[in-house]
Every structure is written in C-alpha cells, then in structure tokens.
Length: 452
Image (cartoon, rainbow, N blue to C red):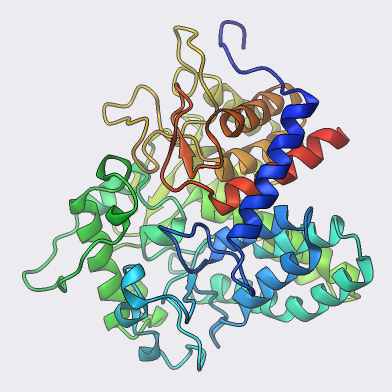
C-alpha cells in the first residue's frame, strides 16, 4: 500500500461530532414508522436502505431499528417477495417516479392489501440486519422477541429467492431489473442493457423526478432511464409472473453483490434460528449451495475477479466494479480467492498509480474509459458498499486494508457531510445530502472502531 496517500485517523472530538451529526440525520428522516433515505430525492421506504439504516439505528434507538424492518416486512408479498419500495401514503404522488400508479402492484395476486409497493425486490440484507440488532441491543429480551416476530417473514423471503427466482437452475437468484441490484447504473449491466430493443410505443409518458433534486451529471442518463422504465413495464405487464422469467424477461442476470448478500444473510438466518430454538440445518444447506454456485458460475479465475452472468446467452460481464468484492462476505471463500480479490482491490483499478490522495472504494475502475467520479455507480465512493467490503475484509483477516477502507469512510463524511456518494479523489459529496444509510453506517463504524 506504500505510495497511496489516504486520509489519516480522526481525533476523538471529530468522532463525537460525526456521531452527533449522524443521529441528527436519522432523527430528521424518521417518518414515525420508518426512515426515508432522504427528505428530497427518496421520500418513501426503500428495502435495502432500511436494512442498512437498521444496522446503524440500533446504536441510537433500538425500538426504531426494530420498527424499521417490521414496517418493511408488513409490505411483504404473499409469495415471500419483499418489495424494493413501500410507498408512504402521506407523500404526494408527484414527489417520486415511478410511484404506485406506475407499478400497479395489484396486477399480482400476491401483493399485500392496503399497502402500496413496487413490484421488484432488492438485495436481501434483512436477516443480517435483524441479527445485528440483536447483537447490539440494549434490551436483549425485546430484541429476541423481535427476531421471533420477524423470522417467518425472513424465511419466506429467502424461500422466494431460492425457488421463484432461480431462473438459471443452479441455485442463484436472478435479477429482473438493474434496480434490484441496488447498483442500478453500474457498468456491470451495460452489455445486457445495450442489447435491449424498445419497441415503438412501449414506453409510457413519464417525467423524471430525480432531476428535480439532483444534477443530471450525477444521475443515470436519459437513455439508461428509458431502459429502466421499459424493463419495469415489461415485468409489470406480465402480472409480476416469475414463472415466465426464463422465456420472457429481457433482463435476467445473476450478480455477485446480490448473491453475496443473500449468502451472508442466510448464514445470519441460521444463527437466528439457533437463537430461537429452530432448526438451522436448512439454512446452512442453502448457504453451502449458494457458496458452491457463486464460485462455479460467477468466479473468473483467469481474471481473478467475480463477474455478472446474463442468462440471456450466458454472457459474462467482467468490468472492475465494487460489486466484485462483495463475495468477501462469504465466510468460506477460499484463501486463494481472497488473495486475488485483495490484489485487485489494491491494483490501479482502484488505487491510482500516481499516489494521489484518494478514497476507497471507487464503484468503478479508475482506468475505465467511461469512469466518471460523480455519476451514479460509475465511479463515486458509496458508504454502503464500503461497509460491506470492510466487513468482508475483516472477516478474512485483512485488517490493514480494512482499516484503510474504514479510514476513507470516516474521512469522507468528516470532509463533506452525510452525502449519498462521494468523489473518490476530491472527496466532494454528491446526490442527496443528509442521506440515511450514510448516517447509520457512520454510527455503526464509529461504534465498532471504538470497540476495536
């Protein structure tokens, strides 16, 4: 790591100020039953945002952390799918697109009654978040009762992914939309999106509300957004029928980050089962199958990198993105794979060769022709993916590199505030200010590094 300038550690006063600021953001974004990612750009409840928020919120308010996940799972579909958005009824319809009128979740017989949701899902971090709440709860009895209430929904969530979404038949859940990845504008999806042909008249008229609150330079392009809307319309018009995915879904991709999070959460589900006196064996077996399929289908030994696999022709996308490191969350990852990932993470793809001060981990290859330090998932640093990489590195004993990632996370927030994402060089904050998971994960990181 010599020659790579990175920010130093923060002093006690700075850490205290960050903690106070993070709690203030979470308090301001609380709606009474759940937390919005931001008061402007994201005025509803998002699925994996709520998981990250709950992980940090337990450090501040255990009851609200528990309520965060229970609110989301109250919108779970009958088939077990946890929607990526639960719409807040008090928010005006014009505040966000695509809203409930677009998704028309009632087209599916599985949608919940009386709750407006989207029709797709997001990375299933929730069992891990629930276990984190229990591990850091001030009231352990209340946390155990919370786990008992949530456990059946968590089991159904993972059963849905293991059955209805296993379109490839090898044990991995396939995504039907880039929005399901959480990293929707990542170069990992470019090949699949570039091959899309949108028929004339297939797109409904729509207005992008995200550009009311963020600069166009920070967001996906209009061409990308057209493809996003077309894919959502296609899935919606099928009645959200997962039985026809293999034959009809224009976008059908197995991704390393989604799979790694699912695997990590299945391990958490086994631990929750043990705490509750339930049988963890089915979850352990599922984790083993995910581990095997992750290595068999998404690991490219020639490049030393995890890839995304499109089920439309079996093509592999090998772009160097932060998603490639998410499989470090697998506790059973072979040592030679861990070494290859560490070599990639410390290569010029993510560390500039000229030794400039920089922040880990950029979301895309610094040397990529279309690298952009401020465009959504095409270069900036995000605290949620940093947190996942940090946890994975620590899990595999890569403490020095993990400390550098943690140092970058805290330095970015100290420098620019609780933004949605950050420039990997200048550290400027982009997207929404006062962003929920940035605040929550800052709280978690401060607590963990203080304990260390």
